[in-house]
Amino acid sequence: MLDLMPAPRLIFNEWDRHGTCSGQSPRAYFETVRKAQAVVKIPPEFTDQGAAQRDPAGSRRGFHQGQSRIIGEAVGCDAKRLTEVRLCLSKDLRFRDCAEIAKRSCRREELTMPPMRGG
Image 1: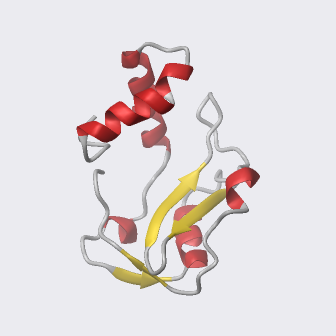
Image 2: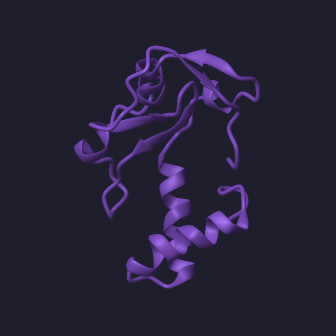
């Protein structure tokens, strides 16, 4: 899992917070995590190691290009930086609406995108 998550502590945290409630064994849960990761295609501009300026709406568009199945998403940020892009998947790993997190999406006009970690 270290190829998907940048630290062992994060892996254990994911299991403790989400996996234990999934009804799956640890092996099955993390196999599902791998399958979910394979569903989402991360655009090249998000995997560049250099930081880039981008607006939150541009971040959303970047994820939608080539993935017309995406229904909803949320962009997270702190004072200046993009911190995450959340996409919602159903249990059968299909994109689903996620209004509950979209309403908390970042509203900043410009963000610095730090280099991607763990993927």
